[in-house]
Image (cartoon, rainbow over all chains, first blue to last red; front, side, top):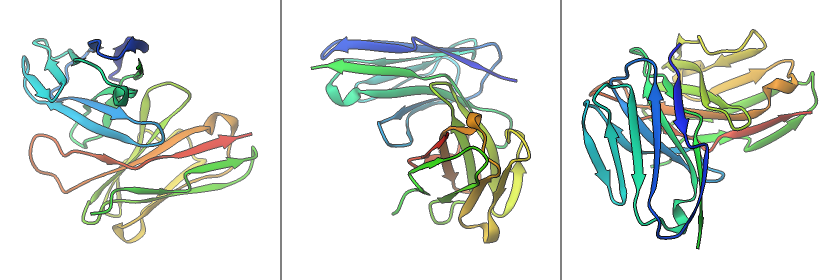
Length: 111
Length: 116
């Protein structure tokens, strides 16, 4: 089945630094999603990408849908302590809406 | 508007026991999904309900897992008998009836299941 490979697995950065994480797949996705999970909460959708090459921003977050439709990246600029959490890439499989997730990137920010 | 709720938030049981997890989706959301995340790995799809019907249960690990959604409202996921490898965080998500390029799924806070 389809798999998403997400990297890095974890990051420990200083407040104010920029962060980049990416996701690759061996097969094509028509939609790329980026979720964030805060401790003790469920994943929350940050950004949805629908077109190859699309670059979308949400505040300090920027995500791109790769031209080949097999990859995506998420950038966070000027990180702050509340950026701490687990970031997941995901894509819908088939027509039922079920999501395939990457392994997650755990982000820790040192004040 | 209330979000997706799950009960209990944590459950610790012995191997061989039975556990039932409950999910209350957002009102009006026909689609209900169950997912599971095991020890730092990816979140994996278990099954999908549309109203009270199982649309896709291809992710259910084995017949020890039974999901129901009577009346198309809340859903339960029962594990009987529980095994050590069933430990993990079980997430429920719901989304409104189909429309648009992607129906956002709203996730509950999860139930952390520990099987000893």
